[in-house]
Length: 356
Image (cartoon, rainbow, N blue to C red; front, side, top):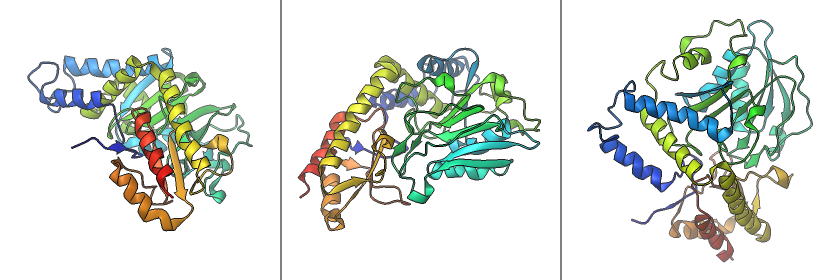
């Protein structure tokens, strides 16, 4: 069976090399005679995996020892609660949030359970079709939370604000895809199932000095400081997803790093947005500001719905998978994570061109 062109938003496409090495590790991990699925997480071989998985993140992000790298369970959604638990003060706690989509709204909902949440900017009233920019965040807030990329509506923060408090970012869907100064953030989190591995592992990168200042009695499993002290092994970590994430990050590092990934991403985005802008049959959901268009998740729709059956049949026949838009929005969504090739994007563009 021929390989599909997988535009799924997540779990998503990964490098073929990662699939191959993961399969080999399941059968026999490091020549140990044991499967990766049965190996002890305390074994020498897996401790080495954990150590390198943490170290490679710092190398790729160019961060120093003032940051700690954690691999946790629960997905990025658990971080919606862990962030305020660890950063919002127990007395008169207050945080600022930017509302740019469904996942940002989820973080806001959880934050309100811990203290006062001010939504300093929102594009909800206009169907999340742009990134708000005219807002200020002062030092009376415990932290500011933003979501770098909106997978559903196809918008992306190209720049991050200068704030007078801690800067927290959910980078689940565009992490390791572009060159940015990661040291501007005090805490970054990301579910692995977009750009760095299969579902089941969550990356947290946190500046150590910001922790332990809330006055809260934090449950052990939700306490970043405890996970740091136990080197992400307070409980049994998600062994297989973590190993696959390491393989994915090694592939990234060995193929030009984030710089090369960004160049490939921009070429892919230019190709598909060029066709959408040229073709009168299509338009994006991000219609207010072109500068807010996501270069990772291109959400678009047919202007003439009578063409839907023809278009759907055409892309499916071409071996394209996962193109349907999110159920809350409809339309189509081309997710072009790091492992997506420009050849696959060209096949989609050709299908769009041939629709008359």
